[in-house]
Image (cartoon, rainbow, N blue to C red; front, side, top):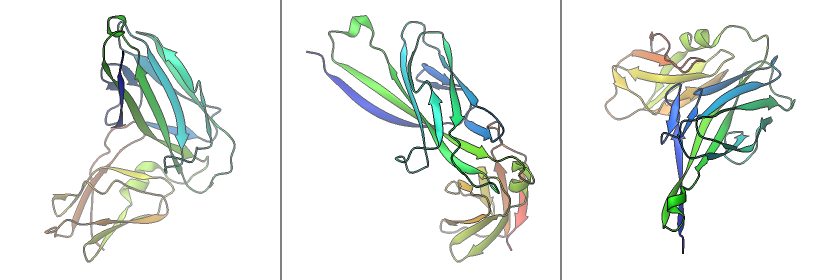
Amino acid sequence: MRIFVLMLIGMTILYSEFNLASGIQVGRTRVIYDENKKEVALPLTNKETELPWLIQSWTDTGDGKTRGPFIITPPLFRLDPQKEQNLRITWSGQALPQDRESLFYLNIRTIPAQAKEQEDQNVLRLIYKTRLKLFWRPSGLQGSPLEACKNLHFSRHADQLLITNNGAFYSVFDSLRLGGKALPQADMVAPQQTAQFNLPAGVSGQQVSWHCISDYGSATEKFTASLT
C-alpha cells in the first residue's frame, strides 16, 4: 500500500529567479500591475529534466482567505520538464483606490509528479507554496516608488519606531538600521500611512539608514535620516 505524506512549505521570495527544490523557477520576486495594462505575465519554468509539476495559482487580499480582484490564467495546469508557461494576471475591474497603490498577494502552489520507480513505495511528497506581493498601481500617481522610499519620516516613541510614508507607493524594506542596529521586523510601510515597529532592547541613537526593494526585486541605494 502506498502512503503519501503531504507537507506544505511556505516560501519567501528573495531573488529575481527562484528554484523550488530545483523544480519550478519563478521569473520575478514581485508583480507590478499598472492600471493601464490589459494583463501582466509571470513566467514559470520547470527546470526538472524528467518530471512534470502541477501548478495552481490564485490571489488574495492579504488575509490568506479573501480572493483578490484578479483572474489568473491558467489557474491550474501541468508544466512538463524543461518547459515554460506564463501565468497571465488580469484585473477584474473591481474599484480600487486611485490615489495610492493597493497590495495583494499572488500564491503559487506547486506539486511534483511521482516517479514511476516510486509507485510501489511509501513516498514523502512536498507541496511548495510561494507567495509574492502583487502591487496594483493606478495611473497618474505623483512621484515614484524611489521617491516615496527616500522621503520616509522616522520618529521614536518609547520602545517603538514610527515610520511615516507620505507617498503614493508602498515602501518595502530590504534592510533598516537604527543607530547601526538592524531591525529585521520592520518590513514595509503602506502609502499615506504610519507603521509602528517594536524596538529590541538596547537600541539607541538618532541615525536611521535603510534600503528599499525596487520594482525589479533589487535593493535601492542607501538612504539616511535622523529621528524627528
